Structure formats: structure tokens, C-alpha cells
Length: 597
Image 1 (cartoon, rainbow, N blue to C red):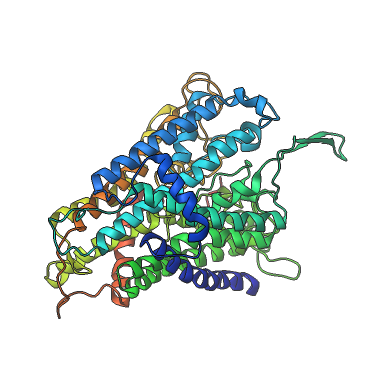
Image 2: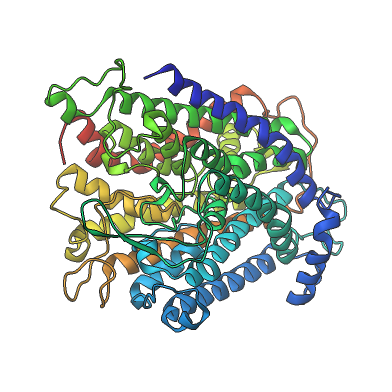
């Protein structure tokens, strides 16, 4: 551990908070219909979009109508992406497939379309060896924007359900939680596009590429032929990070110098990942009329985030059991930062790699700048623990906000039981119907992850997806469990030893035939994305027209340190009860026993 490493971590937290506060104020204005500084620029494109979709943005929708529109829109997006990827070889005439890549098999395409639709961006393929420029731009990048926007609008709808004060419960629009099309269009135009443009310019300035050139081929000093991939990288990288998507243009993701050229871009990309999830918390405080509510939730997220970063950094700086068994010196000495540098980029170091690892696993980003399977047992347990929290430590754009709010409602309910009063949150009573929906919304993701892991480990096709040449014992189980935990949480990061399996010919993903991991992973991602969304919207519908009761002497406060402690306890309790047995079988056993791969 070094001073510069700790300075990087705490400077990151300070800068993130400083940026999120004004952005939260801006987001609250965008979704409350207030005037913003971008109105003169975006007003006309916004109106054109409404005419294109033939919708009235001022017509409110109840939760069922909002959910129906969202599901239909998502299905059309999935179908369009699937067709683009399956017809990739037909677009050579456009000049946007200079390498003449053929279309991927249907099973890989199914997994990829499901992955990018759900903001997971799980990749069973190498981007630079599989995807044309057209597929990367018209398919994957477009869906990066759309999937991120869908997550954000669901969070905004739930916030409206909590915040709305209805005086006449029979009046038209009393059950409205907003209009999906208006929320979606404003998210794209006023939030994602402007910030992505700025980030892309910064990346290009630092060395990311943005072109449509043919791949460069040359003979190196070893007299072996080599190829350098080209492409429109910076534009996809920007929304990949901002939208907490995580799918890399290149197979090595954010470890590739064209995606993440310098230590400065590494820092910027980490900030961009957490920027909107953090800002939405402050926007929530403004939209409910009590900023302290936002501060309490932000404090909860930040405490858990810092705990994960500190553990991961210390574990990696301490070194691995293999290093200690070999008698290697892992402490800081002149000319060396010490620790476990296997699978890490020298230009980022241990602190930059550990922080990046935590940032992208507390969210649904899943981007990686180092090899997770090369982390120590305890360092590798941190991303497991982060995913086990089900995206409530900041989480994905929008996803984190509505996920933490479900936990807030659960904590309010449990707190109400402890003090013997009817649970209330911001003046609205939390009754049996709401808490049933909350419980289902919280438990869907863990159940999907555990069921898929059990099916994969109990079946021969699932076990064959493990690369037994490099992994066995607890490491092999960790790879399988992490794969489905990542996909269920719409994260997308992976222990690289786990891959798709072709049940017909026994080849890795990308070959023809029915691939077990492709299909199970695809269905896991779809189910674990849209089932919680439906429950979150149902909670919004249940709360939107509830009568507001004034706070009394016995009302439990939800904007102070006591509630923060209660909320953290509930999150850890639910995660521990759900995932701790599975974690014991993998990374914890490996970390405690020193079991090598």
C-alpha cells in the first residue's frame, strides 16, 4: 500500500461527490419539467422525437401503461439488435465492415442481444475479431443508450410514486407516474448525449481512437505478422462507461490502450461510471422535497463502497498465497509498489485496478481494466460481495436508485415493526401490498443467480463450460457462480475461465449448435432485468395516490444516521442470508485455505 494509492481512492470520492451534487440538481430539473440551460438546444429535437413516436408527452400513464410501453419498446429493441447482428455479413457494401466479418451463430447472437438490451453487456465474443463497425455503432452503441435510459426512467417513475402528493384521488391523472416516452427522450437528449460527447472528446484527446480505417497489418521485430484493430472506439467507450454498460469494443475491455489509454482516463472513466447513479440520489432528495433523504441514501452507499474499496486494495497490496508460498517479497520497496500485480496493467497499478474493480462491480457496468480471476481470494471475494448487494451500492444508472429504494421501504417496514407503529415513508403508509411487491422485487435477482448457478453446476453441459485446464475446486465454482451472479445483476464482468459450451461438438462459444451457457445466460439476464422493473413500477403505482399523513412524535426518521445504520444492516442481512453459503464454497474457501487454481 502506498500514499499515492490511498490518495487516489479518497480524491476519487471527493471529486465524485463534488460533481454529483450539481448534476443531481440538474436531473431534478429535467424530470420535474423545469427549465434547463440545454432547453434552447434540445427543445426542437425533443419535439421532433414526440412527433416521430406519435405520442403526447403530457399524457400521464399509470404504472401498468408505463410498464407495457417499456416492455414493447424493449422487445422491439431486442429484435432490431438481433437482426442487425445476424445480418452483419450483408452490410459489407457500406464500408462499415472492412474486415468482412460474418454473422455470429444464432445462439451467440441471442445471448449478445439479450445482454445489451438488459444493460449487462456480457460478451461471449471478442469485439475486434467478431463485430463490424456497423454492428458496433448501429447495434451495440445504440442499445447502450437505450438500455441506460430505460433504467433511469424506471427510477424516476418510482421516485414520482413516492414523492407525488394527490389531493383529489378521483381526478384524472391521479394515478400517473409520468410518461415513458417523455422520460426516455429527455434522458437521451438532456442527459446521456451531452455528457457522452464531452467524455468522448476527453478520451480522444488522451489517445483513444475514433475512425473507420481498415485494420493495420505489419511485420514486427520478431518477423511475425501482427494486426492492430481500428474503429469508432471513443464514442462507444463514452456511453459504455456513462450508461454503466461495460461492453468493450475490444476483447480486453478497459485494459486495452485504445479504450483506456492513460492513468488519467482510468480515473475519468471511473468517475463517469458512478456519476449518474450518485447524482440520481441527490436528485431524489430534491424531488421528494427533503434533501436529507438523499443525503442519507448517499451516505449508505458511500460507506459500503468505501468498505469494499479498502478491503480490495489491502488484499491486493498484501499479495497472493502463491507469492507467499514462493517466498516472494510483496511489500513496498524502492522501485516497486509490491502486492499482487498478476493480471493488472502497470499504468494503473494496484490502487487503480482495485478501485476500478469495485466501481464496476457495485454498478451494472462490468467493465474491467484487470483480470478478476487473477485477484487474490479475498480481493476476488469483493466483487462477489458487491454483486450480492444486488446493485444497491450506487448500482447501474437508474437500477441502483430503484433497487436501493426497495431496500429503503423494506427497512422502513422492519423499523416500524420494531417500534410498534404502522410503517411510514415520507408521509405514506407502507402496507401489506407494498411490502409484498418490495420483497418480490428484492428477491428476484438473487433467486435467478442461485437457480442458474445450481443448474449449471448440476448439469454436464454447465460443468463443461469451465476451463478445467486452468481452474478446479473452489476457483472453478467461483467462475460459474460469478458468471450467473454477474448476469443476473446485469453487470457483465466475468472470471475469464468460464465460457460458452457447445453441447453438440464440445467447442467453445462461437461454434455452431445449441450453446448451454449462451441460452441459460440470456434467459437469466432477461428475467433478472425485467421482473424487478415490473415490481418497482408496481410499487410506484401502489404509492402514487396514497394519502399523506403528517409526521408525528412517534414517526421513525429516515434521514439520519440511525436509519443509515438500519439500512446497511438490512442490505447486509439480505445479502448474507442469500449468498453467504455460495460464497463459502468459492472465494472464501480459496482465500482461507490458500487453494491455488
